[in-house]
Image (tube, rainbow, N blue to C red; front, side):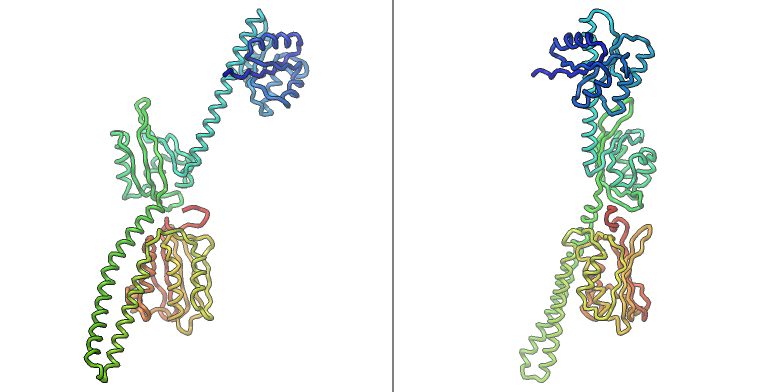
Amino acid sequence: MMAAAIRILFVDDEPALLDLAKMFMEQSGDFTVTTALSAPEASRVLEKEKFDAIVSDYQMPEMDGIEFLKHLKAKGNATPFVIFTGKGREEVVIEALNAGAEGYLQKGGEPKSQFAELSHKIKKAVESRQAEKALLESEAKFCSLIESIPDVIWTTASDGRTVFISPRVETVYGFTPEEIYRGGDTVWLGRIHPDDVETVKEQFRALFERKNLFDIEYRIQRKDQSWIWLHDLALTTYEKNGIWYADGIFADVTERKLAKDALTAANKKLTLLSSITRHDINNQLMVLQGYLSILKKKQSDPTLYNYFEQAGTATKRISAVIRFTKEYESIGVNTPAWQDCRTLVDTAAKQVPLGQVIVKNDLSTGIEVFADLLFEGVFYNLFDNTIRYGGDQLKTIRISSQESDASLTIIYEDDGVGITAEDKMHLFTHGFGKNTGIGLFLAREILSITGIVITENGIPGKGARFEITVPNGTWRTAGNGA
């Protein structure tokens, strides 16, 4: 397949020269030539057509060749430009090249060889521009690809320099590439969790000294002081002047890590649950069977009613244990997720008969917590306990939050009778309470799936106050990322 002819706009104020140039250059089939007698005329032609190259005389009326070149550059026209003129002064050549001309050729000599040399310069200028354009397009595609990848790509040298890091790092880590280039180890190794830093250093040494694969998960502190888990993978790729270079990629795996840890904790709880539940049910069934055995022997005995009462109590206990088993088994079954706290509080409040009690939801819009999907049940249980045990003085329930460097604290408080000092000691214990004795125990277990802690520090007689402490990394403001 033949290459397309190079399209040239030839500008000169000598009509005979234009005719000669067109004849000599088109006879090879490599070029098609359009002519113009002045720079203004050429400008009008360029408004309608595009060319692969422009050849222009230097000295022309109205606008000389270099002024024409500058005019085109100012308008953003980057077409390769060759000056072809009888003027051979050195300062003209320098000015032309400084203005952005790709080539310069002085008129004179035998026409065939003159136009052959001009053809050669034009081809070189066009090839150079096409190569430059292809490189720019390739770089643009590469940058687009790098920016579209959700993970961070990096290159580092064995002397400790970060050679390249993709812009995505600012989203994942909080620091811009420039801050990482300038900061070096203080922005990287200096922010790795103390429990992980030595392992990371050892693997980095192995990466360059033994060319081992660098494959590790570790904790690192973002610019906003929150902690995230990274999965970092790298391989030594080449050596230059005694320095080795490694290419790598890392990803934020915090949610996956939290989910995995939560699942492990949930499995441990379920194992413990199986043992406790079997023990409780067997004990209660033995009681029930014993009383039923006595009833069979004493059908006419006046104490029959009392035995039926005992049997009924045991049956209720069995029912409560089974209900507890059903609720507890739900904890940790599903992967934890980011949940909007304000919405959860509003939803839970609608499920409890509040009567005249006023709920003030002062949580900021957009606060999300990474928690088990039963998180809403924690607020429901708190509302339910308040309504059951808050007493006649109960008028208001308020939910608010406070932020610190290390955590977010969600505060649930009411103005009821509060909780006695003695009851505080057993408040989150399984079996303690006037109802089923499992509500606050379950609340604590639900929250602990993702490392969240609940405590009670209200003043007896002045109301209950529960504080739910959410560590950094498991809460965020919607729109700002995790």
